[in-house]
Length: 353
Image (cartoon, rainbow, N blue to C red; front, side, top):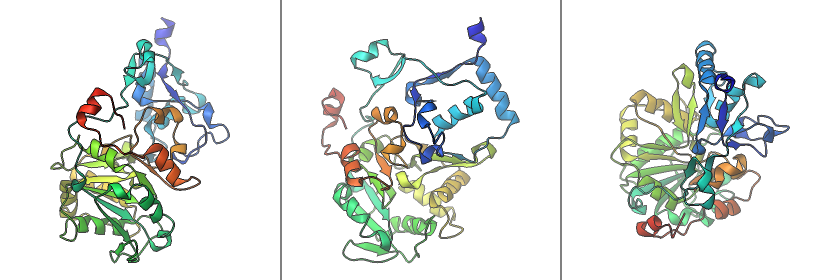
């Protein structure tokens, strides 16, 4: 009876080996001491804990405006600076492949194969827009050219300076140190113009985004381009006070043509050229009542910023930032993909991304 009445927080624990920006550098002196659940393995709360938390949510406003990594933030909220329970590890909650020998004792398993929703989207259906600026032409653009540019059939670099050697296109928007809203909305307008090929999907990335286009082609087979789709790593702002969700830009923002049409038709626009483009787009989508779809395969930060066990059961689509890493080595380790297998090969398990 006592066990039933206790507050239990159960799951498969993850921990940070280094303090990381996506967790606001929490527990900087010893980040591995704090455990949070891997949602892919499922997690559970006892009813007494649910009851107390429900009351707490109603009576106390949440302290953070931003929702970045929900699993970590949920664990912090439950822990409540030591006043609440720690996460208790449950070995039966697993993220091993469903066909592995270890799965026999597991209540949960995961599939590491990509989603099978049909044939991968054709390269001809994706237009890629890379945001850059003159000071990064020689530093960041060469990384893209050495890694994933070859996998994109339609790609343009947008800068504050037209450099024919790359080439880059000047959209007439001055460079800003942050935000880049003016540039992004100019990209949206160009996407719907006759200046670029008529494609079903628009991918907007930063010049320090590392991405697998073939894996994105597979993922997009699960979505209908005739619907207003906005896809990527979803963050939140002020969600407990009627805020909005948005696709964080560094990991890559994917929009169907229909989503872009509705965004621009609505008259939504930047309040300044250096406004945060991803957040402004989130506000626009929220005002229109259009969904923002999360995929954990997009990443706003570097592989080093995520728990090792979290990435171990993923086939990631993107990472972001070149800071303190060799970006080409990171791409080759995590994202390089010469995938040409058929759907039959995928279904038979002979080939994995």
